[in-house]
Image (tube, rainbow, N blue to C red; front, top):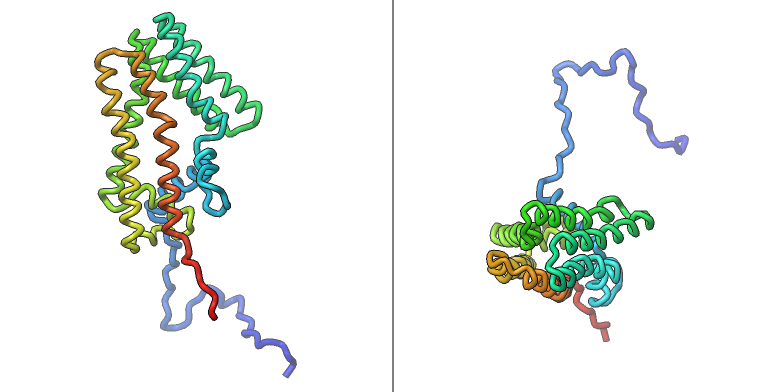
Length: 262
């Protein structure tokens, strides 16, 4: 014994690739491609991580909600363009001036993000949304059309959350599955499915509530009330629901405390 592990005999290069008698070439086995649910879960989970919803970090619920809102910069970016439009339009009734100043405020935030080397999507997202809404209102000459993109967004998001709950693939569950590294295994747990179902329904309710309250004022052409409701039903409703979602999801994954043996 030499102490070395047994090695297989060297193969004859001339016979490489030639199957033995009676053998046939086995078809190559392709790696299974990720399921669509896994891809969606990954995309949603990555978005949640960017928003600060990382279960691996020890943080209070208030800190998590604050990060999800984007901190002070996120609050200013969400509020100031709309607030600027509301104040100017209420004071002057000048649609063009109100829209231009509102877009200008969004452009300032975009420039700041670019200077700080934020991702292009993060830097341009708010400006594109504000600019598109303003362009529609300028094209039609109707101030209420400045809120059409927001109304459409609420309708789409509400429908996405509701449908995901009804078909058993809650968007909240998909996000939690990615963040907790369990994929879609949560669907086999009745308790998790039930909690994620109701959380998705709650988010759908938020978006549909905005739609139900704001649509009548859109059809009435009440621009000032629309702008006020957009602010009042934005972060003040978003933040508490983020907190409820975080607490409910975290409770599902908390390990029971173990008592030391006597």
